[in-house]
Image (cartoon, rainbow, N blue to C red):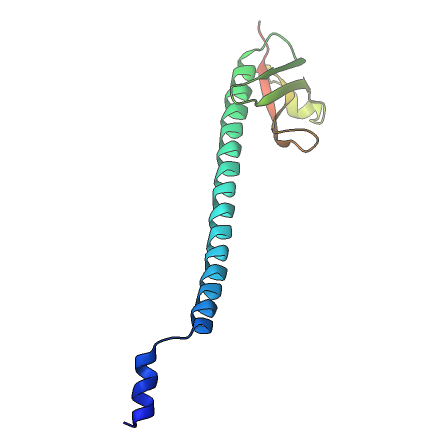
Length: 136
């Protein structure tokens, strides 16, 4: 090995090389932090949707038990600021032949669960056709 090469190896890195390494490290860390922040935000949104889904399912089932009327509208607020609205109305899309012999009335049920701040709240909406038993 030549003497000039051995002196160069002993000298170490220059200030410019260290600065470039820190800039690259900073850029990599910024990307990692952004990915982490996005995943945390997505996790919170997912948790809110799951909570809204549970509220929608439980309210839909609770309202289905109420069979005194073909028409029903109720609303409320759950813990965590979830607002829900339930609607029931007669369902007239089925033909009379299809309903013949049934001891039930078809109704369309719809529930909307909303949360978040105005003017852009998030919401879930579910609807189904349900049969209400006709009492004797």
